[in-house]
Length: 77
Image (tube, rainbow, N blue to C red; front, top):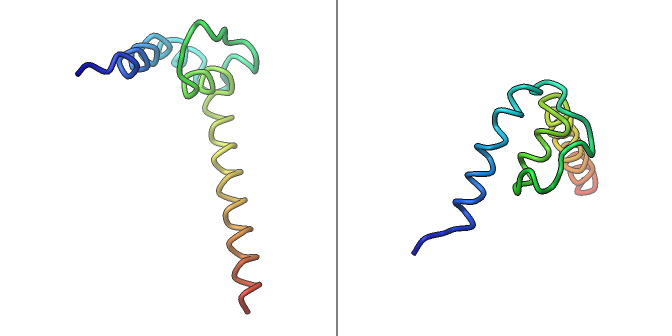
């Protein structure tokens, strides 16, 4: 059985890859990517916010996890 949805997503990723490379660090800006251009949210976000934005987002999620983990640990004492 052929997974056409998966093939379409991989194809969309490879179509967006040259654009990601040309705007790698800062991206193109929020709202600058037409939704018909690509079909995967990962590519849309990489094009929009770039590596700096993705790095900040991951840093933010890690910090939220660490704060919640510390508060949980304190509540158990």
